[in-house]
Amino acid sequence: MQDRIAELDRVRQDVLAGVTAATEAQHAKGKLTARERIELLLDPESFREVEQLRRHRATGFGLDAKKPYTDGVITGWGTVEGRTVFVYAHDFRIFGGALGEAHATKIHKIMDMAIAAGAPLVSLNDGAGARIQEGVSALAGYGGIFQRNTKASGVIPQISVMLGPCAGGAAYSPALTDFVFMVRETSQMFITGPDVVKAVTGEEITQNGLGGADVHAETSGVCHFAYDDEETCIAEVRYLLSMLPQNNRETPPSAVSSDPVDRRCERLRDLVPLDGSRPYDMREVIAELVDDGEHMEVHERWATSVITTLARLGGQAVGIVASQPQSLAGVLDIHSSEKAARFVQLCDAFSIPLVTLVDVPGFLPGVGQEHGGIIRHGAKLLYAYCNATVPRIQVILRKAYGGAYIVMDSRSIGADISLAWPANEIAVMGAEGAANVVFRRRIQAADDPDAMRRHLVKEYTTELMHPYYAAERGLVDDVIDPADTRSALIAVLTMLRSKHAALPARKHGNPPM
Image (cartoon, rainbow, N blue to C red; front, top):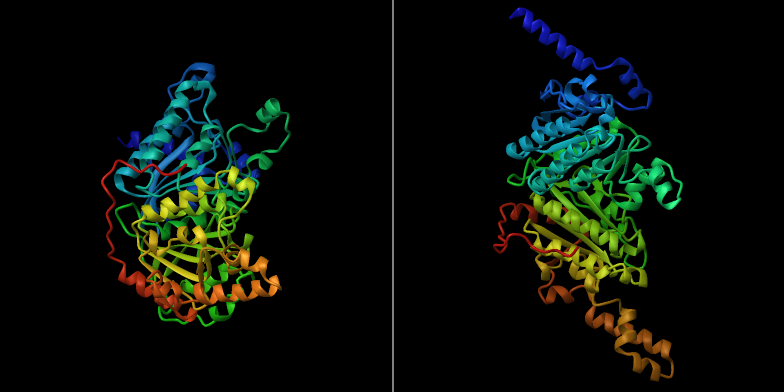
């Protein structure tokens, strides 16, 4: 037995050491190895590996002469801040991290374990796609991953961390998960690489230009978070996990905060201009409201006219959807509607209360928006809010016009509490536009049309757009001092902590796509 144990120790040491030349090549590219990444992600000494000694069974194209342990993927579980997390990491040193039958089976197993245990799953992706030598078996392996991604959706948090080139099928699994992290210069995602693009369309482009972190963070919206190095990226994954529950049956973990729940936010009185046409940075408002000014913005650089971010209020995790007047005046367009809708669905799936900060002039007009399906895309956000059963609080800071007011979690679509600041303007449209429509003939017939327009704009504002109009009709629960917003939000969240709302019995809805 002692001899057998010694042999086992030698095998494990060989597996853990890997091939020195391959490790050096990985480091030369500015990349960590799969095991180094797992060490950064998980608490020290907490990782328990599964199927470390697994090998592939393929025989063709020279594979029978090369059967390394792990088959190019490391799977197992550990803890992040003491809570269980499952992980799989492609090992680029073995077959370039390409997926074969045994490789896929290991991933299937760890995904099934994560679902059964009700714990988050983190994938550290650095693979070259399907292992060509194994043919359709590799493709079937990807199918099994996609099926499990879908089964786990809304059940456990799924986080994809892109740490190398991921093409073809390797890019679809991350797209099915809740969050995608990328590292600049070293990670790329695309369905077909630059060589195929050139062959088919004649376009010449680099890997980063086609599917790098900045492209997916700013243009496509595939990437939620982009960082300059792996260490920072993985540290932020740990922080994100601290904001999320283990599964859809639990609530997010609370945290003790030294930020007083009754702290007044005096700066908010001057931060938001009374003039509805003047921009300001909504991030500053959010920083004033949340615990210690800390929040984690999702899709920070994509669809920037709306902000989606995770934070804490009184130690309780919340999801914040906020207009951003600094970008396109805070209008909703195709991309911002999609961005906010998916964030609302995520928060609802994992019992994260929603706070919506509203300063929205409407939906973005234009032929491109209409032909691009702004009706369909805007309806995604409407559907997401109407379907959400978590605690929902709306705060109207300044203007809220037209359909965008309704869509941004108004009382009429199910917000539990709606609060407004004293400068709020809630109406079908701005006073200027409304006067031009309602009083068009009177303005045209006047001796001084400009003077008549100004008079009628003032009259419309006084009658229908004063800050208490909606409150008088029960569409706003209270008009509050901006400085009291933080304490008001925490009080409402505390009251709604045990909220339970049931949806009609159905297999699933049919949201706009």
